[in-house]
Length: 150
Image (tube, rainbow, N blue to C red; front, side, top):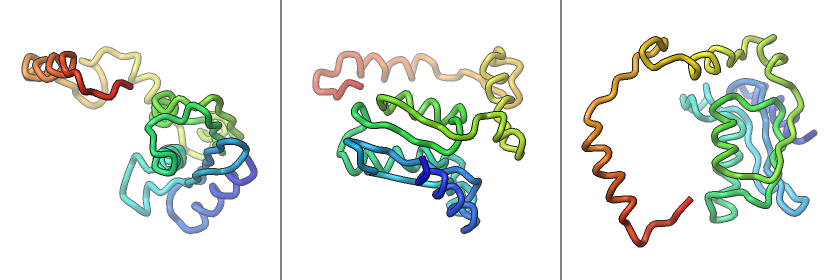
């Protein structure tokens, strides 16, 4: 956890993005690490957890982190929480919580609230189009015999 917190400070001091850091550990060793790089890379998905998960998957040559533990300097935001669940680590440890983050203007509460709203009343309009064309591809996937399931 100390390394994750130090990464948060390093990234912040380099003006790479917000004060967030993360490490992925396997068999007691750090295999990947990252800090927030949103503003330095112009990538809104470059949160510390996503950066570290991407690196860990590259190192391990897999898309799942089943035997890994994630240490992150802050309780994950909704996007990072989703990435963590898709990566399937065995456990996550965090230092600061979402209230600590909100106290320095990193407040994700509006996203949690948006997720609970019907699509028709969200801040960003969502409209379904070409559903059948999309479903056609899904049906092809369902019939595909050489797919890698995940």
